Amino acid sequence: MELLIVGTLDGQIGAASKIAIAQGGQVSLASTVEQALDVLRSGKSVELVMIDVKLDIHKFISSLEQERINVLVVACGVANDTSLAVKAIKAGAKEYIPLPPDPELIGAVLAAATRENHALIYGDKKTEDILKIAKQIAPSEASVLLTGSSGTGKEIFSRFIHDNSKRANKKFVAVNCAAIPETLLESELFGYEKGAFTGAVARRIGKFEDASDGTLLLDEISEMDIAIQAKLLRAIQEKEIDRIGGKSPIKVNTRIIATSNRNLEEAVQNGTFRQDLYYRLNVISMNIPDLKDRPDDILVLAKHFIKKYSELNDLPMKDLSKEAADLLLHYLWPGNVRELENTMHRAVLLSCGDEIGIEAIMLQNPQAVKEETPTVGQTVASMERRLIIDTLKHTMGNRTTAANILGISIRTLRNKLKQYQEEGFDFPSAPQGQ
Image (cartoon, rainbow, N blue to C red):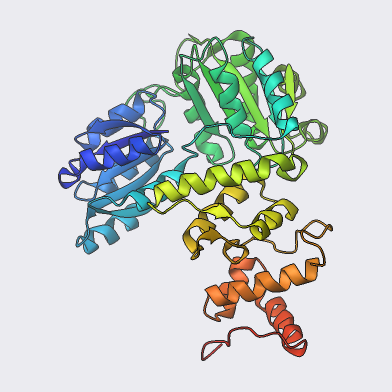
């Protein structure tokens, strides 16, 4: 990811930069709001801005909105700047980070802003077979369409293709079509000229130009408005784009990788996706299987995430207990690799013993378990009971918090607890008032 630091941050720029670089980021610096806007107008692929809370954040974010620049902004300042922190959040900053910067907090913000670690970790034969195909087609100039459920790692596979292509030493630029409002996506992709619309106070380079000679990832392309699809088709066919308000086309040499978690053939039939664009993108198509369908990846990835978040939080490395490993292998992972990463991050923080046990594994949907029992004589019902009771222990009996962690309604939780009580199982009492 690319991070832009704006202002002096009370002399903490060096520390913040060092932490960001350790998280896998690249850092640019700007002293003023105007300098920061110039950096963003240049087409530089900044994904996160950390701005000194003493600067005019309202002016900065207003300029971003007027100029249709989509980027995540967090404010930074000394811990006692509470009034400025509140003012920054009201101005539109997504987070406030107190200084001196805390590695864990900055790490969490960076992780929320982008997947900062692009390593491809695997252990399953299916994943290996996909990577063989990806490596084979990577040197070509053909467009690639990657399909698969949310959280399967489509962007990671996209980067693998770029890194093994002839464009590897050029830029890889990612655009999340689902996360950018429809009114901003055209500007984000194609840029605009000064005066193209109210708020266009300077020329801005779009992602297509920024990625020229490199690779442009159009993530979740199925969410793109059909009007923008027409401009995209022309850009791919003619290898040229028109900035908004521009008088002449601009030649580009950009390879396209697109991803979708929806069936694009159905979208074509429904009239929400252009058939000609689908054919242009679908020169090479690869499907990334759900995590449950590549089970030999699960523990390899789990151990990778344990190492990652243990180091990030300065905690000792721990092994997974057999029971915890069995649970991971028998869970269906509806959120795929993204859910596994979040689960292991929580487990690293919650684990109290010498190893990560089953009590630290907080699943979003504990009922999504394979029919096979992970250990002889243990049923899905007993696993569910253990998860619920262990979660209650962690929340010190708080039913509402436990239900939220488990992903079930408070009514369902209370019914389960009533059943367990009748069966003679012990669990923490509810706090007063619950």
